Image (cartoon, rainbow, N blue to C red):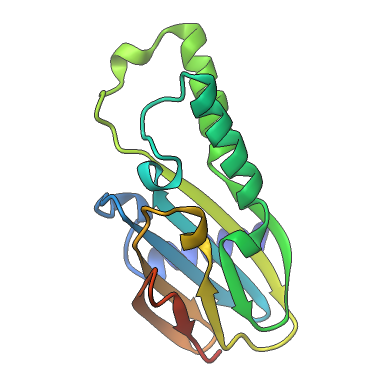
Length: 179
């Protein structure tokens, strides 16, 4: 599975000709990167933390930390992010919330906050890896239900049959894709 994940990540970065981290940070808008290799499917959501959590600052209060924990748990269930039109089984998932939360705790211990820009923009990333038994014909983005201020996702993909891009919105969350 590691080879698959590494291969798809490289395919996303090279094949689509961009780095996800170089994209413009716009509140209300996120990204969805999709890569398919045979029956394997990977999806990566990149969402401004302000839309995902309601804040971008370092979690200091118990309320902020609770919001991170709740969202991290919700993102473990792929149905909170995407409904795939095809028979796909979730193989693995990961998100950036656990990593950023523990890194911030370490920063607290070392008092390194002075080096950070107060106005840094932070994103929440969630990656899902699936094994699909039937061809995928489309997707419905359900992440909008979790994040009321998220209005649009710029979607880019590489599939067995080609590559493309589109935008999905809260009012039109469907992606038609014949693999």
